[in-house]
Length: 234
Image (cartoon, rainbow, N blue to C red; front, side, top):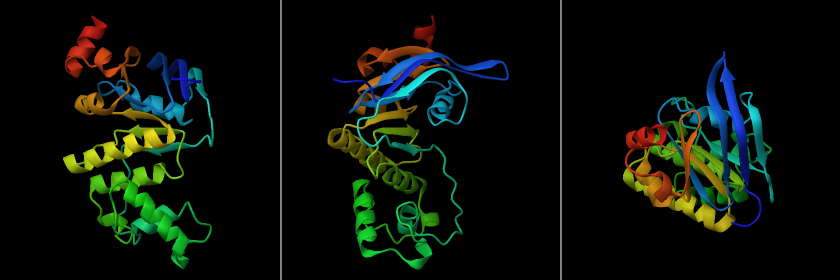
């Protein structure tokens, strides 16, 4: 890769009530790459995302090297929806994108834009569906559509494939690969799915409160996760 990384972490440490949650975490995310962050439960993956989003205090350095918009897209692991809320998918996506309240209507140009957004994640025709009636996998793809429009320079995904069936997961992968090729966005994704990482990751970082390994999938993903942790800490 040429030029600076889109994200550079150096010595990132998070301590809560005297207990280290992250210790001296250092790695880069390059533009135009999909970088997986893997590790066991309690390894500090979500804590690292909280630090990146400015939600927790940390020591060390986090640097963003923006080339264009400086926009960060984010898809959380859990997103609670009131199933009784009378809100359509189009209204949910339009709320941050138009000045007038969605209860007064959505203009023709905005509706066309929303259809394109939904097409990108394999949800053509979903604009008028109630948000509360979506399956977990469908909701995750709506959140992805929201996160990648406008195109981010850095996309943070916290276990985005949770609840997706095989077809939806493949569509999710296709969307990420297309985003990488079209925009050279950097993608940092938390996942427990090592097969998923082997299929689409450019780089993988194995985390257990500190970086155990970081490199290409072939360098890091040797055996299952238990074997990785045992081998890396031996």
